[in-house]
Amino acid sequence: MELVCLGLNHRSAPVEVREQFAVLSSQLGERASKLRELPGIEETVVVSTCNRTEFYLAGECGDEAVRSIRSVIGEVASEHWYEKRRLEAARHLCEVASGLDSMVLGETEIFGQIKEAYRLAHAAGATSGVLNRLFQRAFGVGKKIRTETSIQEGATSVAGSAVELAEKIFGKLKGCRVIVIGAGEMSRQTAQALVSRGASSVFVTNRSFDRAEELAEEMGGRAVHFDEWQGVLAGVDVVISSTSAPHPVVMPFHVEAVRRVRKYRPLFLIDIAVPRDIDPAVGEIEEVYLYDIDTLEQLAAEARSRRERQIEECKRLIEEELAKLNLPGT
Image 1 (cartoon, one colour):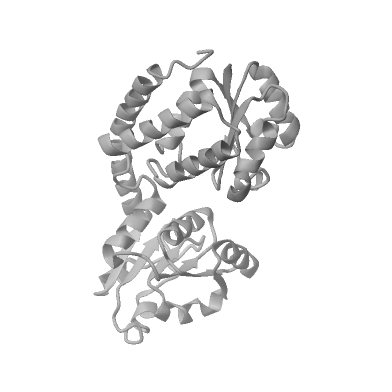
Image 2 (tube, rainbow, N blue to C red):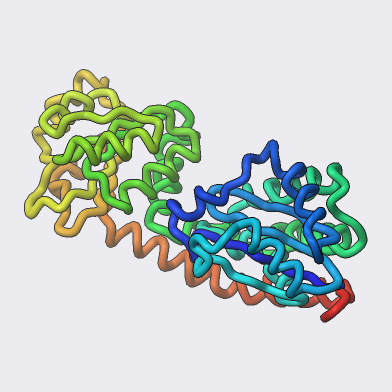
């Protein structure tokens, strides 16, 4: 029996490619069961999240299993798919389950998503000895890494650092309201991170209203014309600004004008533009917390340095556990 992983993720493929191959969670078991009908595939688990789609396969001939899967997914975007075999495939699954292969290093959501994918495949009769042992070992590795290392401590991205600071200011972010000024990639990432932690309302404004509408739709929010964003300021808790303007967009008078209406509630401003969008004097207003991209990047870099040391420990634990597995074909 040979073990194979064929997949794509946030590193190998952009979102417009990943979404073409996404599998609804309710269909993971059924898809795994149908794949077993293909030549060369005796066991399979299908993992599909917003950041990855992966097929874990076991069969007598890895080449035949891969040909069967590729016949299903077709030649579209074939350059984005990676292929891992035997011990490399097992190692990859352990790293995914441990959060080492995630967009946010050490994130915990993927662990539950993999467990559910395996549960559905197992319930559909799509797994047997090889994948049962592999996935159970991967779950043990994931749990061990989360309890014996500090891989989850400290956000390692600008977006993650912004969320951590927001949580220090507001506590839980459930119900927080956000306005995004500018519709660039960094704005999108930061807004997404806030929404993932509970932010409930997102307003998006941009000089190109079409672009604002596009990002707002992606966030489940509402687009605001650029000459109207100041009217939204009174009701939000977080401002994310990342425009290409050559001068500040948010000035002290903008905030001063709505302080009384806001009842002097805390206001968190994230300036991730270069040159800066928010006049530094805004940060001198009493209830305002202002952070620019340099501060956020410094916090993320410090966290990355600490995490790098933890990654080596995580990989050592993974190798220890893989040695106990005695996979066929390795």
